[in-house]
Amino acid sequence: MLRTTILTSAVLTMMFSVACNKASDDQQKANAAQSEANNKIENAQSEANQKIGEAQASFAKRREDYRHQTTLNLQTS
Image (tube, rainbow, N blue to C red; front, side):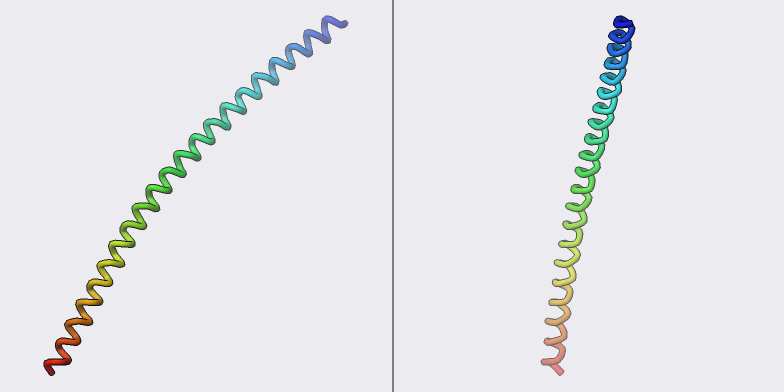
């Protein structure tokens, strides 16, 4: 009876150990995937910020050119 209990305990301990290792591996894979996704998001946001900055600079230049041209037109009228 004691042998059966010890054997059963040993088998159950090994099963739980394997299950814990699998869960740990799955968590590590999930963490790696999340890290990769975060890096892609950061890169995309950086690109978007750069394009927004360029668009704002272009708009400011066009607005200033228009204002300047309108002022000149009004002075010559």
